[in-house]
Image 1 (cartoon, one colour):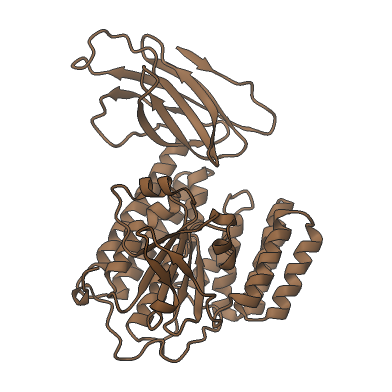
Image 2 (tube, rainbow, N blue to C red):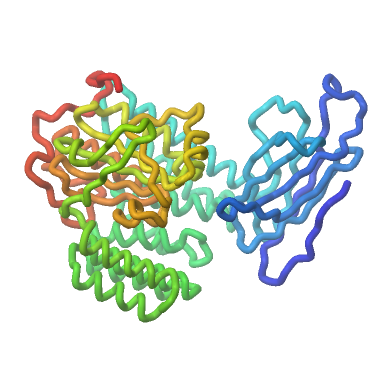
Length: 471
C-alpha cells in the first residue's frame, strides 16, 4: 500500500484511517486490488484541499493519516483505479487520536458504509436520529389533519435521544453537535429544561455560541429580556476564546433587537466594533445596525423585485395579501438539504393563496443551480441572488448565514427571521397564521410580535393537505 502521511503540525488535529478495498470476483478475478485512491478533503469555496491521501496496494490495503486545522466532519472520497471515476463519497470525522477502519467491496451492495471508530459511530447515530425525526415530522405535516400534539411528542423524544448521545459516545464531535441540536429542537416546548441543559454545554463544543443563542431565547420567554442578558453573560464568563466572546457580544446585540430596543442594540453593536476593530465582527456590527434600522419585526419588508429561474418577473408586492416565506440558501449546503423534506411538507400543507414560498439561491452560478435542481423537487418561486452572499440582494436582507428564512405577514410587515436550525419555529408560526390562531402566542416567541390588519382571520384556510390546489 502507498500512503501520503504528512508530518503533523503542532496544534493541528490528526486522525488515522485504514482498511481494505476489494472487487467482487464476478467483476474482476485477478485479485489485484491496487490503485484505488482514498482521500479526505476540505472544500474552501471552489478550491479543494487534500487533508489525507492513500492508494491501495495489490492486496487492497491502505492507511492514511488525516490532518485538519480543527476537528469536524469532512468528505471522504474513493476514486477508481483509472483515476477518472468517483466511486464513493461519504462523511468522515477528523478528531484528535481517533482511529478508524473502512472496508469496501465494489460494486457496493449496500448504502450503509460504517467507518468503524468511536467518532464515526457517534456521527452515524446522530445522522440516523435526525433522519428518523425528519421522516416523522414530514409524515405529521402530510397527515389529513394538522395536529401539534404528536409533533411535540416526536420533538421531545428526538431531543432526549440526541442529549443521551453525550453518555453513549462521550467527548465525541457528533455528540457535541447532537447536544446542541437537542436544545434547538426542545426550544419553545420546555424552556426550563433548555436553559438548565444549555449551561452544561462546555466551551470546547463547536456549537457553544449557538447553545448560548438558544438559551437566551428560552430564558427570555421564561423570565424576560433582562434574564436573557444574564444568561448570555454566564456564557461569556465561560468562553474560551476572543472569538467566542465576540460572538456572544453579538448575541447581546440580537437580544436588544428582539426586545425592539433599537438604541441599546446600536450601542451594543458599536461596543462590539470598538473591541474588535477591523475584524469580521466589526463588519457584522455594521450589518446589525442596518437591520435595526430596516429589518426588525413589524417593519415593512424592503421590496423584492427579481427574475425567477423560469424568466418570470417576481415582486413581493405582487404576493401581498398572504404570508410570504423568503428563504436564502446555498445549493449543496448540508443543513439546507436535510431540511428540504420538511420544507416541502410545509409547502404542501398550505394552499397557493394562503402562503407564498420564495427561495433565493446565494450561488450566482446558473449552471451550479441547475445542477442542484436536477432530480430534486423544490416547489415554489426560485430566484438567483446576483453577486451571491456579497451581492445587493443578500445585503438588503442582511443574510450572512445559510439557510436564513424570513416570514412576512399578509400586509408586507416582517414577522421574524429564522436562521440555521430554527425551521421548527418558522413552521409553528406559519401554522398559526394559516389557521387564524394569532390569539394564541407562539411557543417560540421571546419578543413582541406585532401583527398588522389583514394578517389572518378566523376564516383563513386551515393547514390541511386536503384543501390543497395543485401548483
